[in-house]
Amino acid sequence: MTHPSTEKIAPISHRIVILDVLRGFALLGIFVVNIEIMNCVFMNQDAFSQQWTSSLDILAVRFQQLFFYGKFFPIFSLLFGVGISIQLVNLKRKGIPMSFFFRRMGALFLFGVAHILFLWSGDVIHIYAFLGLCTLLLVQLKPKQLIIIALVIFLFPFYGSLFEWITAALGYQPEIYLNSYTPETIVTTIREGSYLDGMRLRIQEYKSNLAVLFVSLMPIAFTMFIVGLTIGKKGWLQDIPRGIQRIKKPVLWIAVLSNVYRVIFLFFLWETEIWKDSFWRTLFIYGMQISDTLMALFLVWLVAYAFQYSFWKKLLSPLQYAGRMALTNYLLQSFVGLLIFSSVGLQWYQTLSPIQTMGLAMGVFIGQVLLSKFWLSFFKFGPLEWIWRCISYGKVLGIRKKN
Image (cartoon, rainbow, N blue to C red; front, side, top):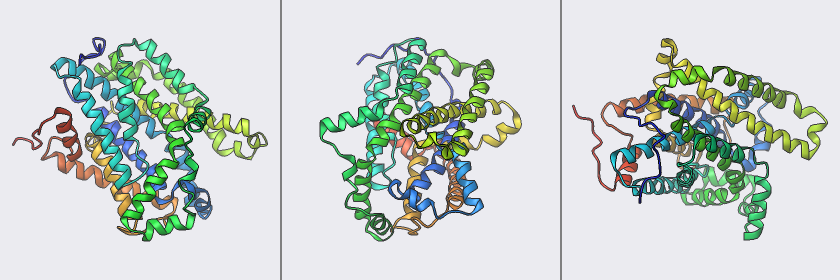
């Protein structure tokens, strides 16, 4: 198969450290959010969260709402889109057939399926594999066209209605898949059930959460993929410091306005009469999703901006080790969660408070950074990155560093 046109994307001949730093940063934020869900599934969240009334736990929840929820998944998605733009131009430059890219996305999809079956139902990389192939259809478009498409996808307000129409047409009822489980039996299954029982629950939970994937995650991920592709086409990766300075003022204005809305939403809006109206409540939640995504873009800019200064560069640089092994560390976080919360490990499911889960996530991630640095001192790639590359190239590649 011939390559899509990539002549407008400037080739990258070296590894860009700030991208690895941002991947590590995204991994930390994703785990802080995911560990909350690992500790208590969506079905039980409302009742479970009501028991944590201490000042520290309330502060932890507010801190996560302000700085973590809805912020790091868009960052991870943006970086994946940037990675696609780099991969496509490198394939063309090296004369590698496009079958490489299809094998790469196919392998990523299988990693995602295995993640759901064996570790945790909240996987996103299988979505990335599908959307990665969709992004391929857009690579020949100009940056302005890409931005228009991204805005249409991002601002389209009727994904919920569209999902309901599709599921009704197909006779698919996501709500029935957890009917056989009560909040109590979920706790018993995860804490005391067999590994096979846990696998069955993960499958049913995934099928029941398809609305979250379709309505909330896929549009944001695809939007960020397209933005990442646009960044590659604009050549901003060739001179990141200059690009950061060029967009400084609009980014800061976006950050101020989006944060004003987020503070009003989180601290004042819930007690008003207008919040009780379902139409306005839906509109406000939709606005919060937009605001969170804009905050994610600001965080990307902020980390890249800070990385230009020696103090912050020294502080942030260790994140690159976790970022270079992003796939391995993403799945490793779920494996750690399985060991901590389920019957195959400590059985701590629905026992940790918000401040405890946040502290645990931070501690595990620091361990991942240290482990990744140690691993990369001997090997060129993370273990799953190496397997992914071997499948993509269709041959066994060397992994050990030469002395």
